[in-house]
Amino acid sequence: MLHTLKEPTREVVPPAFREQYVKAFNWMILARTVEEKLANLWRAGKVAGGVYTGKGQEAVSVAIGLALKPGDLFGPAIRDQAGRLAFGEPLIDAVRTYLGSRLGPMRGRDGNIHRGRLREGTFAMISHLGSLVSVVAGALLARRMRGEQNVVGATSMGDGATSTGAFHEGLNLAAVEKLPLVVVVTNNQYAYSTPNSRQFACHDLVDRAIGYGVEGYSMDGTDLKECLEVVHHAVGRAREGQGPQMIVASCLRLAGHAEHDDASYVDPRLFTSPLGRDCIDVARNYVLEQGWADAETVRQWRENAKAQVEEVALKVQRESGPDPADEDWCAYATRRFATFEASPS
Image (cartoon, rainbow, N blue to C red):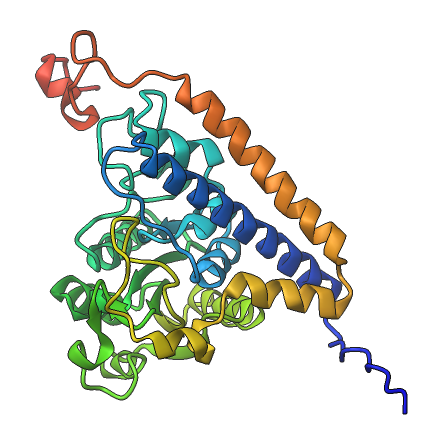
C-alpha cells in the first residue's frame, strides 16, 4: 500500500509577525556566523582574550533586540550578539572589538566583549554579571527625572547572575520605582560549570519575580516564535506603565563557557532533551513548515551571512591596533580635568 506524507500544519499568523520572524531568523544566522568566524580567528591566534558565543541562545537574544525601539535602552550580556545586531549594532563593531582595532567603539583599549554605544542606547557589557540591572534601572530613573517618556530598558543575563547582590538590589529598586525595565534571564542550566541544583533551591527562577512584586514569565528559549511573543508582550507591558517585567527562558548553552572550555561538565543527557534543541534548527524548520521560504532560500540566507562576515573580517584584519607611542590615553570622562579646560558656561 502506498502511503503519502501529509502536508505540515500551517498556522495562520499575521503578515507582520511573519516578517518579524524571518527578520529575526536572519539576525540569528548572522550572529551564529560571525561568532563561528571569531572562534576560528581565536584558534588562529588572532584574538587576544577569549571568545564567548551565544550558540543555542540566539532566539532569546534576538527577541530582545527586535522588541525594543530607537530611543530605548539595552544592556546586553556576554552572549547577546543576535540581540545587539537586531538593536542596531554594526557587524563591524563586534569584529573590531575582538580583533583590537583602534577604529572600534572601544578603540582597542578594553576587553573584547565590553563594547557599547551609549548614544544609541546600548550599554557596554559588565563582566560582573547582574550589574546591568542597576545600571539600566538608574538610566531609566534619570530619564524619568528629565521628563522623558515612552522609554523602555532591557537587560539580559544568565541564571548565575540572579544569585548576585546587584541583581536583587537592582530589581528591588526597579519594582519600588515601577520602572519600565525588562529583565531577561536565560537559564542555560549552568553558571559557567555550576549546575542549577547548586545555584538555587526555588522551583523556578521566575518565582523570584513574585518576591519583588514583579510580573514574571517563563518561556521556551529554543522556540523563536514563543520568544518573540513573550518578550514583545513584556516590553509592551513595561511601556504601558505596568512596572518591571522578568522573563526566564529555558534552554542549553550549546558550547563551552568560552572557546577555551570544552563543557565536559555538562550532563550529556541534556543535549538530547528538549532543552538541547538548537534554536536555529527549530526556527529553520518552522520557516519551512510555514512555507515562508524553501531550503534553497534558507541556504542563500546563510551564504549571504557568510559573505558579510568574511568581508568585514578581511577589512578589520587590515586595521591597526592602538599605538602607545601616539595614542591619547585619557578617558573621555576625565579629559576636561586632565587638560584643565574651563567648564562650559
